[in-house]
Length: 160
Image (cartoon, rainbow, N blue to C red; front, side, top):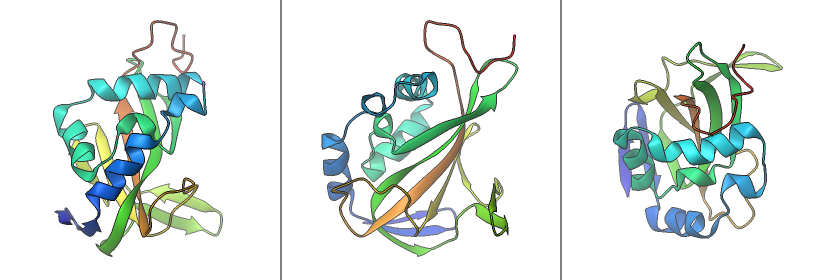
């Protein structure tokens, strides 16, 4: 199925993507850090536009390939980055990651697509940490997001 999302034109096999995520493990199966535990639980509380976007591509957001916390804002919301994989081909568009020099990349938020006021995505042909058994061809969906702290314990990322 061909999707046109902002600058991107993607040919996505939603059925194969959905099948992979149906059988994949939630992020807490491989990592029990507070950032991953919070991400897995918090994604169900994101705006409907974000959840629908990922569902339409066949992605279960709790089963992120990689997520990381870049810090917290004054309200305790976490500033996440990370990525998922999608079965398909990137037909048009460029990643929001920009090479500053040989060893440094910078996320150009103006090049990404805002799914909500706090959630931005980008697509690229290159894939990192592609899961074993992920169907080919595969592309990567990168994200940058502000996500609330939802765990019933102290937020270790927030300054006192």
